[in-house]
Structures are given as C-alpha cells and as structure tokens.
Length: 368
Ligand code: HEC
Ligand SMILES: [Cu+2]
Image 1 (cartoon, protein in one colour):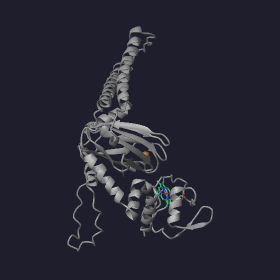
Image 2 (tube, helix red, strand yellow; image 1 turned 180 degrees about the horizontal axis):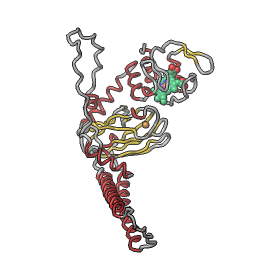
Image 3 (cartoon, protein in one colour; image 1 turned 135 degrees about the vertical axis):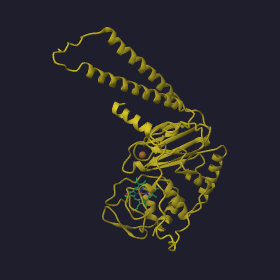
Image 4 (cartoon, helix red, strand yellow; image 1 turned 90 degrees about the vertical axis):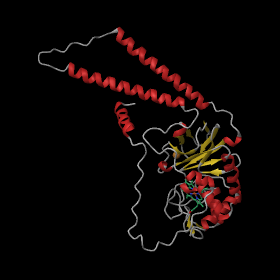
C-alpha cells in the first residue's frame, strides 16, 4: 500500500462515523392540512420472504469491512490486519527516520558532505533476510486461506445455487427451479454457487463473507461460504462492467434453520401459479430485462416497453413490422434477427419457455 493511501486509511478509518448518517427526517409538508393527494394504487402484497429481504442491513456502511459472517473468514481477516499493521509500522518508522536525518544532517556552513559507504555486509544481509521472512510468512498465510477458499465442501442440492450475472442484474436459480434476484441461503451450512455471465465480466462480492470471485461469460466459476449469522447483507458486483455497474447490487438473506426450506417450497408454489402479465412481470424483473428495457419511455440499452404494443416498428433493413406476439417471440428467440436502427445488437439470448414468452407479451401489452 502506498504511504499516502495508508495515512488516508488510518485517518478516515479511525475517525469515520460508526454508521453512514441517515438523512434527517423530512420536515412535515407545509400544506399538511390540505386534503391528501389521491392514494396511489396499493402495493402488491409482499410475501414473507420479500418482507424479510426488505429489512434493514445488519451492518450499515463504515470505512471498515463489517464483522465477518462466514466460518472461513479468519484467514483473510488475519492477513489483512497483518499487512495493514506492517504497512503502518514501516510508514511511521521510515518517515521518522527521514525527518530525523533531514534535520540532523542538514547543510551547515563549514560542513563538508561525506562520501557514502560503498558496501556494508551486515546492513545488506539484514535488509534482504528480514523482508524475505516477512514475504514468506505472508505467502504461507495467503496460501492457506486460498486453499480453503478453493476446496469446496460437499453440499446438499438445496445449497447449490446457479448464478447468472448480466448487465446489470443478478439472477439466482435454486435446485427446484425457483428464481430470484435476491440471494437466499441457510445459516450454519456450506453453500456453493456456480456462476456465469451472459455478457461481460462481472464479479461476485459479499463483504461479510469475505469472498470475491470473477464471473466470466461462457465459463463457470465457483464460490462457497458458510454463513454464521442470520440477517440481510450487501452483495455487490466488483468488476467495472459498464455504465450502470454501480447499480448492480443486491442482497443476501441468511435464513434461520427451516426458513430456507420454507422459502424454497413457497417460492416454488408462487412461481408455478403465475401466468399472463404477472408471469411476464416476474420474468421482466428476474431475467434481467429490466436492466435494458424501461417501462417509463426512457431508453436504456434497449427500447422502452411503454406504449409500443400494436405500433409499427421500423427495422434496420428499412422494412417495418407490427409489435405483436410474433415480434416479441422473434425478438426474444433471435434477438439480432429483426434488429432496430439506433440500438446496438446487444440483446443477449435469454432462454424463456413458451409460457414465459406469452406472459412477456401480455406484460408488454399492459404497458400503455
Ligand atoms: C443487455 C441488454 C438487454 C437485455 C438484458 C434484454 N434486452 Fe431486449 N433488447 C435489447 C436491445 C439493444 C434491443 C433492440 C435491438 C434489437 O432489436 O436487436 C432489444 C429488443 C427487444 C425487443 C424488441 C423491442 C422493440 O421495441 O423493438 C423485445 C420484445 C425484447 N428486447 C425483449 C426482451 C426481454 C423479454 C428480455 C428479458 C428476458 C430482454 N429483452 C433483455 C437489449 C436487451
Ligand atoms: Cu457487473
């Protein structure tokens, strides 16, 4: 670490407030007595696991990493403290020597500079042997935690979760077909993630678990952890993956014993019961369409779905086509087949079932 960064870390790390300041409560509106605006449509009923995920984070942000909630986090934590402590020690020691020598040997009238010694065996052996020992200790520590991070224990099928990262969305798929944007895991059991990307490099990072792993298109990478505490924690993408990289974040919900199984079976029931526009909406949110297609008319990577149903769509080859069920199906199954001018050919092939495609068409039809 560069000395100035370390100084920064020490100053801000030690004096940062324990939690990010919450915005002050908004003052009551001046026209509090005026009749309330017409109430918006009541929000759809939340399931218990959605309410669980909507709870506040167990740890709010500070400069430091939050306390670990993974059985295997001691290695990386010890190493971090070691490196930080050593950097702090050498930073202070070297700076003190520099200041001392600058003052002691400064130029004075009548004092002649002395030639530097050309050779000093004791000194040279010392400054080779001590750093070598330090480097070897760090290597052994690092190697040990690397081995444990990459030795994935046997887990039951329920705890093996498939992760798809895409611009700019996370999708978690469980063994029974349940899909979610929030990662649900059980406490006190090893969990294994098998991850891939549909587009560019992404990276999975959950600070409380102290695990970070790149996600690579057309390849699978793995990560595992053993949650030790229930609650809601942050999950980030830590690979710069384009314009909305900073929004590519979600949550991990660590469930207490039994609740995870309840989530799997009830979410499965809910998913199977969806059809039509409700299924389309769920696909829109869970399969990453939301990352590129808005519902409010604004353009992200792809065209918005607002008010497009039944219109004539101008295609790149000059022809035009009606926005109907067939166009939706073609756009999803062969995204580059009927491409539109002004949009990059960046729509990925996202496999959807016939029922999901029909639901998607219903959902787009409903965006007036
Ligand atoms: C990475 C960005 C991206 C994602 C994710 C994405 N799309 Fe697209 N989509 C595009 C782009 C860009 C176009 C327009 C270019 C083209 O037609 O080839 C498009 C076009 C479409 C069209 C035609 C719309 C029109 O106005 O012409 C439909 C329908 C569509 N996408 C549906 C979906 C669905 C459903 C999903 C989710 C399962 C999805 N898209 C996910 C980028 C994306
Ligand atoms: Cu990303």
